[in-house]
Length: 350
Image (tube, rainbow, N blue to C red; front, side):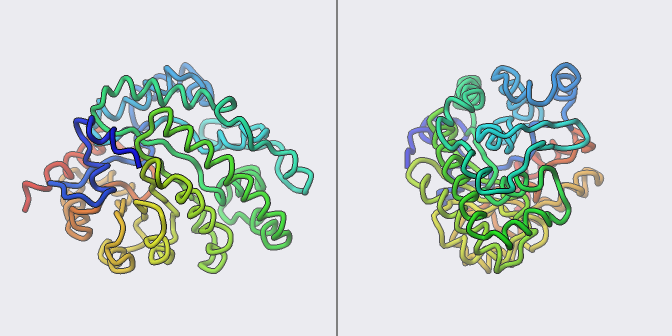
């Protein structure tokens, strides 16, 4: 694994935590930190539609840097979207504010799967790679830059369902009634996602995270078939190039096996206690999470108290302080900042 970037970085807490090196305090960042709770983001949203923001490297860079300046996080995560992968594979994706993503054409047949593109990802998603390179330059080695992609099962869900769902019954029906075709589709998504993340690392990402947002819709048995193998395959392919964080939301039952795999970190939500997460992983891997984003709406003194309790539960070594899911748009900026400050102040509370 290339460690040159950690030598140059002024703040390399995230990389140290992922390598299980000793730190004075945990690093802290927040999922969806570059987003709708920030006034600067809201101003840009009024001027440009979502995919214009994603596909314009200068805008994506500006948005990525906003929480670094406004909130003081220890890592930047590139502003993009997991559904650029279906776009690169040849499907149309639209996104309306407040309504979520919509794919007019969904995957139903073997021909649909065969027609999907898995090549030339650097050409199809050059706007993300340019944004990474520009952001890396603007960060000027202050903190690490995180790249990301959606995990194969989550992308599969959108490509089959066509939009968000509470049950994902179409995606599950596809997987259960056409298991061979489902495997072919998941493998295609895995192939292009691996290439995409390798390109992100070359473009400047110091760490990459795989978001399996809908893995929690699966039973433990189905997770082992439809999600886990592809998470492990991607992490294995990247292990010599950059640290990988897996975030299979709602899948605490998978912690024992995933902690023995090739990833360097696992993100967890608030459905499991820090102590149980440590117990299930045998402290073999760095854990990330698991603050309930809704708690950021509480009074600031309460936020700080809960953050310190969370760190007490995980311990400050081999741990990345984060939310258990993305920050919500109605969170006041000073509350987000209080979350970050509480982590930074933790060393003074002991």
